Image (cartoon, rainbow, N blue to C red; front, side):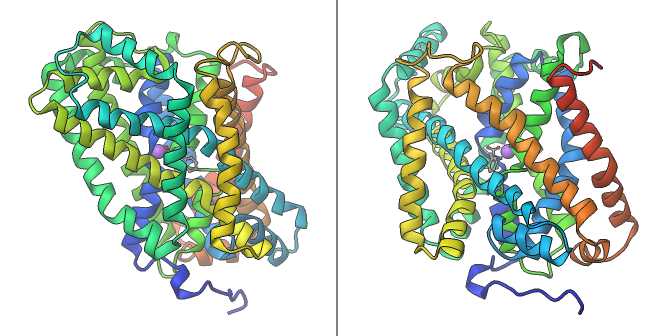
Amino acid sequence: STYARSGRLPQQQWSTRFSFILAAAGASVGLGNIWKFPYVAGENGGGAFILVYLACIALLGVPMLMAEVLIGRRGQQNPVNSMATLAREAGASPAWKNVGRLGVMTGFLLLSFYVVVAGWALAYMPLTATGAFTGVEPPRIGQMFEQHLQQPLALIGWSTLVLVLTLGIVGRGVRQGLEKAANWLMPLLFLFLLILAVYAGSIGHFGAAVEFMFRPDFDKLSASGVLIALGHAFFTLSIGGGAMMIYGSYLSPQVSIARTSILVAVLDTAAALLAGLAIFPIVFAYGLEPGNGPGLIFVTLPIAFGQMPMGTVFGTLFFLMLSVAALTSAFSLIEPAIAWLTEKRGMSRFKASVLGGSGIWVLSLGTVFSFNIGADWTLAGKTFFEALDYLISGWMLPLGGLLMALFTAWVMKPEVTALELGGDSAGYRLWLGLIRFLVPAIIMLIFLQAIGLISL
Ligand code: PHE
Ligand code: NA
């Protein structure tokens, strides 16, 4: 055809459509769903925030996820080269490759705090296994988490372990590493979330949780809450960080981008809602605060594990699953940088992993210290961790996503995008309409609102 593509080698491709779905779901379902979603929803008042978040997923998230996967699959390289290739194909400015650079950077920065939180999950495995929560009073369980954060060296040890595990698997490449890990771990994670939600509903205040999550009270939602909902929709679907672009580049041309993207979004949303249903019944039953911040799951779930039959076994396995969910996302955060270093700089995968990993390790110290010795190094009232999270989720991911959307919508030729999306159908037209008009308009409105230029 006129728009032929040069492909990746077969060993650099997912072996089946199902492996891609699992790997993409693995990238998507992570700390964002189980750790972050409940606490940001709690901090922003629940129902109305969740409604805006769900609308962002459906109207903006799905089309943007498709756009990002599409760029990767058509470009067949790391995000920087893929953007450059497609810009050339469209006769556009080579400067578009900076969008790829932004993605690689964002993933890199994000991973630096991701490994710290994943380290908490890992640390909670032996704690739960040794019965540290069994029969312990709920307030004491809250203090235990606080104390955990007060030990920088231990935190560094755990996050280093997460980083080493991540690089050990990513270093093995697509089929042996990424794919194998996701294939058996993701289904288990869902099973666990389901069991936990059912158990939490039976020991806790299920009704109060459902009301908190699903009855919108728009008075509780601020302008910044809307930006946070948007940012979290991007964060949770892994949009704008180059992750889905690089995973898309390993995808074979036969697979439907639309169907897989929708499925990934549905799985991701299901995981977040299940996590909420596992956590809020306990929050309300024990008089905890839903807006208590990043420690929420590390306080609520150990309370449940401390009381339920077989709680030690169950809790240990849960934190194992959480660590795994974090790991499968961590792979996708470092992979763009590794692919870039190997394809563009000619480094070996091993060397690229060591180099990338070292950079992330150094940056991760900022997050570790923001919970203890550096708790009062603040910028505009935000600790290092809070500022980094706000910068990435609130601005970098949405900006990266916006530029990718504009690129597929207005720069790439419709013949090409239609070819990648399986032909010019009603569904294709709907996608094109959303990505051309609705997606950029809404993101820009939310940006303008967040910097105070307009008030809706
Ligand atoms: N989607 C992941 C989560 O919910 C985080 C992530 C963001 C992963 C961006 C890759 C890229 O935890
Ligand atoms: Na997610």
